Image (tube, rainbow, N blue to C red; front, side, top):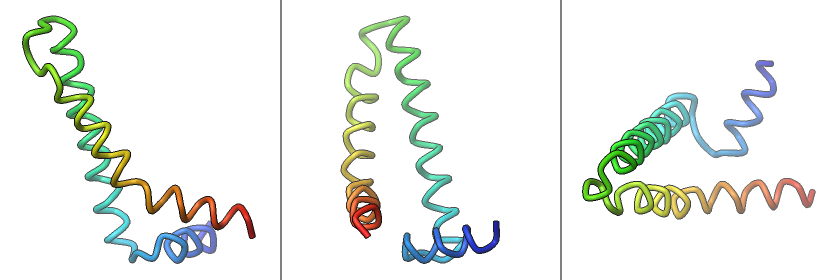
Length: 75
């Protein structure tokens, strides 16, 4: 398991704590998006575009990861 973690951190080009911060922030964005989507479902006038905006931003932020995974799968 340690080797797998070390390889993942190497592939991500992050230290353990950099990776932890990134993962925790992504988790918080997902939680925030879930909350705003839930509230929007109850009252459509609230948080009209928050969830879709957060998802789009997250998608754009994850592009380097998608490219890294694609390169890794080709090798």
